[in-house]
Length: 384
Image 1 (cartoon, rainbow, N blue to C red):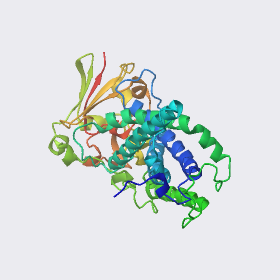
Image 2 (image 1 turned 180 degrees about the horizontal axis):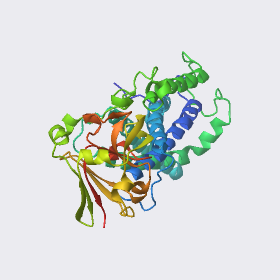
Image 3 (image 1 turned 180 degrees about the vertical axis):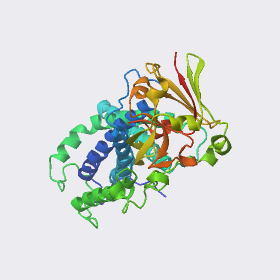
Image 4 (image 1 turned 135 degrees about the horizontal axis):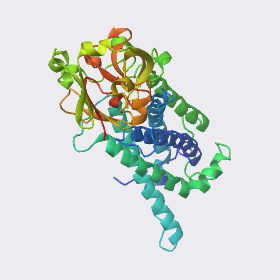
């Protein structure tokens, strides 16, 4: 069986005119996904050279929601883009007599190979992450996802630079223009080029509507693929249960204490009743997770600034009862510790925290990734 050649593909739909129009929106989605991913990565760093802002309180909710939504929208765009340029995969290389053409072709194909591989990896693992499914064990999702984001965006920029003359020409011409078509691309498809592009955009829109309910509450009735849509005590979903964290016995023990450590010494040791006896405050804050879901909650508890008194000019190490996991202990930057909206929450929606939501107490702070909103808190340690 002979390998196909560019002449084997005769559909007029496989054209630069279609590829450029779909690719334009794919690039916009990739760019938005990349930038919002940088925000998420920076927010999760243990320290920030430039303080991560506490306002607006919904900032992380919006950026991470955009991150997941644009990633999902990229899937149908990428599939149609790859389908439209498939004939180029079988194009013969220019001869050595045309060194400029040879170099440009190698650059183009190299960037495409890297771009396709990294894009497929990013989208596949990203979708798995939204469902909290991690079949891989050989690498860290967050570290690898971040590193390959730079690879993908770099390959995309190289690809655009190489193809810019063609992209500019076809985008400023009618979609049915044939200037850059392959000579054998003469067979009409089941759709017109314009209909194919519109159908692709519609598919991306449907994908967004099917998943955006994780972030946008009024879309939840139509977001059939949203993995978190507000179910849970107090209208806030639960990612990790107390049973999964193995804290059921420790969290419900009458011996539980919250230790506040300053300068290496225990400054305060508080029981649950002690926390209840302190002045209580209520805030409306969203909790937004890296999987893209978010929910608004009404939280009540003790202001962290009141617990730490004069020790709020340094970062605070927040430790959970859970004995393992990458987020068992998290760093709360000083500007978050000082913010009056940052609570050691005891209640959600007017009811005591459920065990799965972090009873006896949990951290809740504005504009902070959900993985850093530590549950089952047992220790607050002010950095020296």
